[in-house]
Image 1 (cartoon, rainbow, N blue to C red):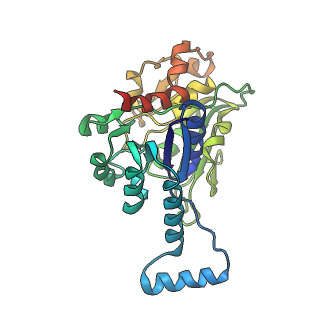
Image 2 (cartoon, one colour):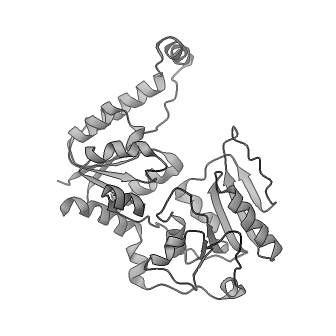
Image 3 (cartoon, one colour):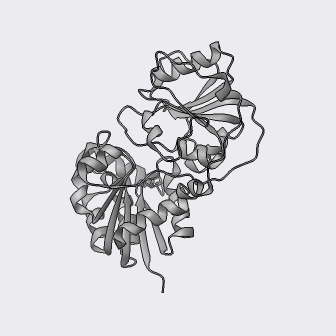
Length: 321
């Protein structure tokens, strides 16, 4: 009988579905998945009215109650050899303890830096193994270092644009404006999409080449946006030391990369012919040769090292050491 793995993660951007699919394919475990932010749908108008009174008079939320019942029901279906949790701060204490008690080994995966989500520190002692892609967090809190990954290999397409950029509206907007102004002034064809909630309108002036969208593009399909471009643009988050998914997606799709993350020069896949690092956002020039010369294929071991298959095997290997 296969060993069982319980994977708990929020449904943010659909990352959980990509990892769940990878775990089923490559882990060797019988995998059970819980979406810790699954949205409960009212069965009828009476439940909606009932929830109104719960929230108003008892400060409770029927949706949270039902989500907790759903999570508990799945946890209690089995005993597990491993529980793998992403964003433990999203779970209630009861759900967290139930998952840990039903599992022989526990692994937590921090997909955001502790500086971005300070409450993650509270969970380090609760888990047997803690993993992070943020190099500072690994050093400061003795976490296991694991990079991000790519899950889609090369897709053959025609390049209609030089550069494509896909991001969420946040503090990087100033750098976005500067870079797209540079592209426009230097006849570099670029396109961008910025996601923001309708309740958080973008106040800054954007070029016509950037489209604002209010629906999240799932991680499982967001790579398609890059297919008709030669280069992926990556603007590093100010409170994050590790590399985002963009450099790894570039490896998988055989695309060049322009990034503001200067740490990338320390990685084994760094190739200045494929990756241009912007060291000073106020003073830079992208060489014409970088835009026109062909992409240089990395060695096969590089491609395999950062593929989701190896990423999963790396995380699960920590409990064997």
